[in-house]
Length: 219
Image (cartoon, rainbow, N blue to C red; front, side):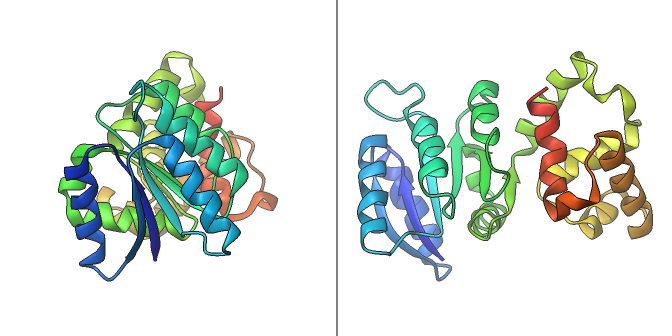
């Protein structure tokens, strides 16, 4: 897996690089601001050497507000084949929603505390690089909590809401079943009901799992 890391903290950037390289992945570049990130990806694209995934901080110089997430949104637009995983100190609903509003493939939003859980973090990076989704449980909880206030979840049962939250974390049906201590068949039934209630037809394929979450975020 080829990775580019964008993080203004040199200590954290070097730590992420070491963490990934120790597990056999190739960190092809590390930069400290959003402008350098865009420039680096454009240069790699010109060489036909795009990375599989970019790991970027939400807040980067010069203003430390939203440069990182805006760069991430631009990269997803300009290079849709590159996965983007953003890291944030806190859950920032506006940024998470903006990032997730486009294509449902290859996107992730994790809190920086999650980096301390090494295996979980590396799994998330790999999942995003492969076109999957990785959403921090805290991000899911806050975003879906806001949606509940808007009555978007009124049609779902409590168990369906629980299943949806685990789906949004990127878990398979089997993993959801294990977490909830139910059968795979029961989870499949819940998932089917969620798709039905959200109006996601079978023609939309496997990405319905992500679209189910995006339906709430964009409501």
